[in-house]
Length: 71
Image 1 (tube, one colour):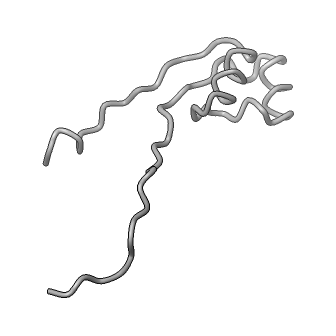
Image 2 (cartoon, rainbow, N blue to C red):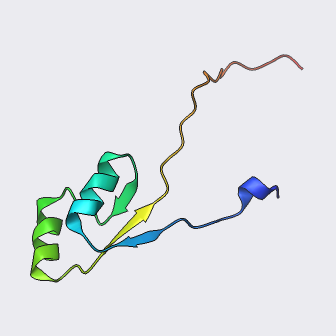
């Protein structure tokens, strides 16, 4: 496998609801979902201690053709 195929992780712990919401707004994947009102209440009650920020999902800016090429 090439170097791009390895798992590099990328998670960080976030101890603030406000920071978790900010990161999510910037496009990061944050678990559990800090915009969920039930999650927010659980965080405030102490049932959820922290959030995890994961790397952003990549997206292609190039249009990919699905046509078959002749061989």
